[in-house]
Image 1 (cartoon, helix red, strand yellow):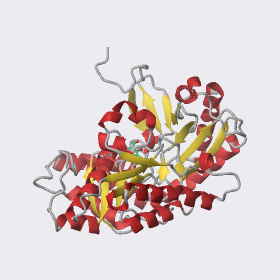
Image 2: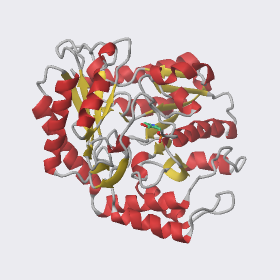
Image 3: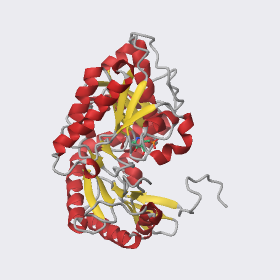
Length: 439
Ligand code: PLP
């Protein structure tokens, strides 16, 4: 009997014993193509010798030194690397252990910033429905996924949720994509005005929505309008690139494609590429200086902030992305994957939409592609899809829709950037098999 407390008690997963390139192997020797990159983590694939060497070297010289007393070479190097390529005025890097810690810290930083500059009445956060920002209480409050929030609702801070930018579901017939984006963005201004502009501290959103919608980018112009609205009312823009950042979309930072830069940016997952648990919150010089010239202290922290081994792994990942042009490769292979998905499933009766950017692609599974009607949730299409794909040797990330029928089932794909052409066919073959079993 296992003493591990698993996430799901309804199944007994096989034991993973080895990872190599794009594949994971269990203890029976069965190979699985890592089509979800562990939920968009394993951008370099498994067993990368350079990252392993960097981890080994760092653990031998300095495994840990508490940031209450020291900084470290890897933390300094990683922060320099990130800021050298970061968009806009992002200037400081707060290193944490994962995505939820990064978004949680972002919310607290926004609050502290406004206290430090003498606007303590700013306390409201606005986020979007059908989003995911992590599982700690602040991050969960910001997230707009009804199912994940439901039982913890009494413990969550009050966050307003506006509609996501989800063209497939919400664009009206005859409305241009651009007009739809402006209409969706208007909800932010309306909500700021409803709450009272001087009470709102931040708006948080994922540039390309991952887990809860399946690789959905905003339409052209949406984020430029969002940036404008935030600037008009002095609302900080927090972009959550925990899943879509670090090259995943074919840009190092996903917001580059939207031609905007945030005040606070959260990254994780691909930052450590699975070799170490690490996340980061980047903020502008203006925010940092408000604290520096004010209390001089960020009232937030965890023991493993700036962990030297995690930072060394992430610095090695960053240098590998750079030296091997892997972000361009993500764009190029992502295009091939997208084209193959469209060729194979573009006319499939149960696939309503195929979207995404770079190595971040999503398929919307529907009962009727003409009316875009989702499957009845009780058919558990996404759960059956996950099992069928796994049996076929493909790890992907299907997710159920909402019970109100507004959002249907989808499958998220986020393979390693090192994937080769023949593996594009392997993915589509296995997806076709899973689709036939699940629908
Ligand atoms: N934000 C986004 C967009 C995510 O996709 C996730 C995880 O899936 C998180 C935050 C939370 O990250 P973590 O699971 O590392 O805490």
